[in-house]
Length: 99
Image (tube, rainbow, N blue to C red; front, side, top):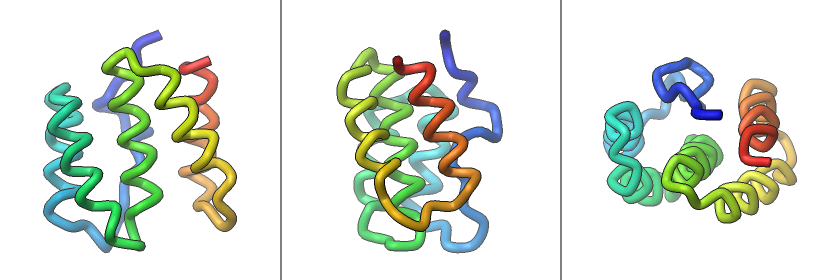
């Protein structure tokens, strides 16, 4: 099942957007997944959006046919305590798709 990258199920952040994260979202929506991964990776240093960036990297990996890597990233992310409920829902939904 293909994911609709235009849906709001993407992990979005309200306040602490940084330029790399924003650019990553733009690339993701344009289906430039390698470029998006590069930008999200740069955004991992921002503690406010690191978990969302990890989720979006997993989504890109899945879209690039790297289901194993995406699944591992999501499983690791799912074990992080204190995740936002919306992010947990998105992780679980993507884990179902990835298999």
